[in-house]
Length: 255
Image (cartoon, rainbow, N blue to C red):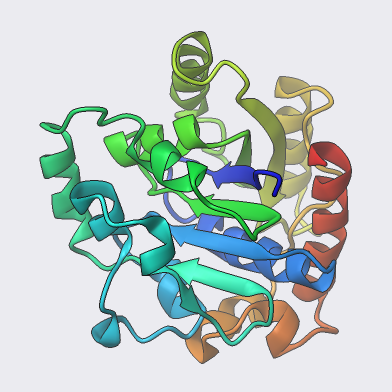
């Protein structure tokens, strides 16, 4: 069976819609008849709760895979979305990072775990909002990086550092890592600021910014509290339609 396409969703700035985007892209990929595995690689475990998985009732998490060499398949749990499975995370993943710093092959633990995996078309990694050892593991394991950027004044701050890290990873441990695209999130087309930021991002990343932008949308904000992707919560909402259109763009860029 062919290896899945691995996409790491990363921005070291929090609050840019990283987890929301990972969950909703994963959902939309299943609607395109793809089998998807979402790896929650963020100690906050928001993707886990956003998919309605009970964190108190897990016998294994991504931390066991990274630190205790448990096979990735043993940590996979089903979700309420047909075709979408999850490797969950809980806050103890933050301690994992301390242990990981002393481990051998510490940069490629996730890559090695994914290598034995079959039965999936896509693997999405929800990286933590930091340039940490976990994030580096996520980037080394990935074929593509998807970069969500919020349409706000400080949008570009810190991106240079992330792109520098990506360059170093390409030089060393993952020469084929590519930027799938930059996704502008939380955009409010009524404001001049949103339009200015969008223009600035397009100038900074020529040809790499997705045409689809993600609007500020109440339904997107409400969906995780119901443990659902927005497309399942309210498929006619502006947010659900945006993620559907974005996913078609992603498929045309990465397949």
